[in-house]
Length: 156
DNA sequence: GCCAACGTTGGC
DNA sequence: GCCAACGTTGGC
Image 1 (cartoon, rainbow, N blue to C red):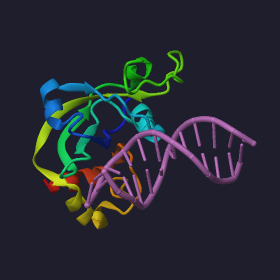
Image 2: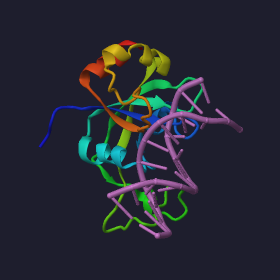
Image 3: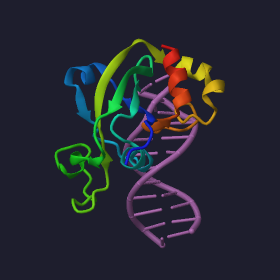
């Protein structure tokens, strides 16, 4: 069964994994999400083909730098079982995995990044409840409405 | 590097 | 179930 295409925003620290890295590799498993709400969006909400805004956090100019797409169904994050990984979770069992991810595929870089301060400047039209700019919210994976998607890309 | 804000853990 | 302590996120 398929439902209508959905839209998301996914954060990454560019020192760790950037839009240029994604362009280079094409498709990347989105490892390391260890927040239940973010996991639920990936596990329960995402479908192949969904649109993704690729956001750079913890950098000089935080903001949206590219467009990507969901490139797989959700599956268990293998790093949770890898003792050498910094994402290892000793409480997760293979028969009952705790953390899920999707593969993310490169679509394009923005002609011009859309910085966080510009996004904030449009808070009124984006909606005060938009999780990216809601005070105190630090979700690394969050839903974006079709309207917000269009608005944000119109700022490019 | 600082620190506000939030989530998770674990003792009780 | 409460809540203090701790860890993490992420802008600045």
